[in-house]
Length: 138
Image (cartoon, rainbow, N blue to C red):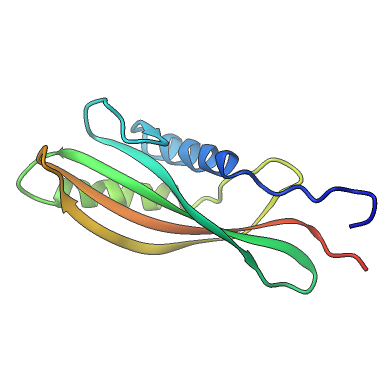
């Protein structure tokens, strides 16, 4: 791009947008690291990014994991209900600041469900966000 620096989206901005969406949509606390607070809660983890191919736009795919941590129990039911609530909240697209535009938001499914040593159930769901940060001009 002539005369203008191409600015890429910071993963910190994306994590903030996902965190707000999950917290607003579920009503449960959500952060960017495992919290010391009592369960239930969510946290969002940045897993990586890679350029996406397009002839007309500068695109990048970001992968994030949304973790759901439920209260200690014998059953997975509570954590699976949390995942369903989070999936419903994530049906709305994340809001990004200008000049970035969310092109695609896809759920890549539940990656794992496990029981932590504390007795809490922990589910991880992956999401891919395709972000455009400008048109290619020749």
